[in-house]
Length: 313
Image (cartoon, rainbow, N blue to C red; front, side, top):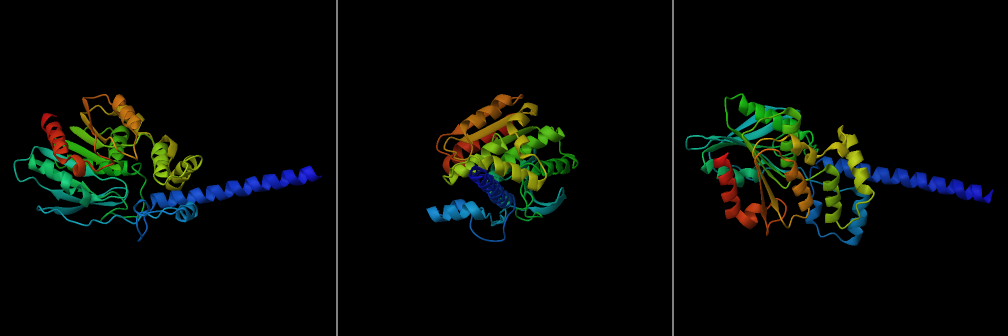
């Protein structure tokens, strides 16, 4: 009888622990994929041990990204109908145009942070379309799927420019934007003239593990549960979200760029993506750069590499 009571208590304890852990990760997954109306991004806060414990139970707040500046050049604001209404800035080149570059931002970012990058394309005679993904800037919603559903938005922006008669379309994506570009080409068979992708993660699971590493919290088993709940809450299988696999179906010219001090994406992920690309491809790494900060650390080199790519292809 005593052993039976101990056994029952043990089962109840395991059941309660199972429910509690899943409830906690479900909260984390929701906050990871839905922006809040205020607060400060958690990675910008100096977290104490007690704050880290608190975050384990409450999840990480991500304020909705807001466009803080506007282009200094003449531009027009437009809306593209996709899974939600997507706001874009169209900036025409002053010289005779050579094509159009569509630019997509990263996680917790927005199109205003693409303005500096757009300058190198504009100076070389390319029109630019800067895009707010859903949940960011002027676009609808508060949801983000780290590139999964955003791939549809890449497709619809591409089709919008394609239907205007433009024959030379380039796609630029940073981090989440890079992944969304890759998935869009894989899923919808887009045929851009070329793509420039920066620091794409290898799989959804790997990028979730990186978030735990940034907070110095062990990723096992919470990373797997977070991927499961994140996908379930947003209507997709997070474990099948695999940019390394998408690379196999990309045949256009690709410039892949990576900062060697990147704490969110590993070099092995970048190498796996690069190996699977089938078309003409170039891998450029920046020794002093981290994740998505090439212009801050290596502006001259970045501009030179990007200019060379778009003028050759």
